[in-house]
Amino acid sequence: MLPRLRSHLTLVAVALVLGLAGGVASADPRPPRPPRPPKALDGAVAEKQVETLAKSVRWHESLEDALRDARAKSRLVLWVHALGDLAGDT
Image (tube, rainbow, N blue to C red):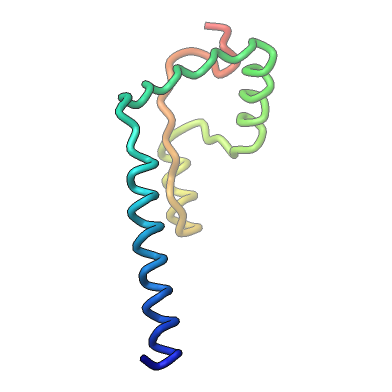
């Protein structure tokens, strides 16, 4: 057998053995754990995030104004319909 062919066959054999061993080692009979629910934010952290959001987005007072500006700039409109105050004082 040619040395080059022998090295290729050896490489294929090693890959097959590693592939089979990896499949057996990763088989876990236990069911996966359900994801943990997210933790509630601390009030101060939530307040800072709301403040950052309110400052970093240019808000329009009306949908019509937002649509007019979006058409002029060829941009999309992000429409947020929320009840209450963003600061959380509802």
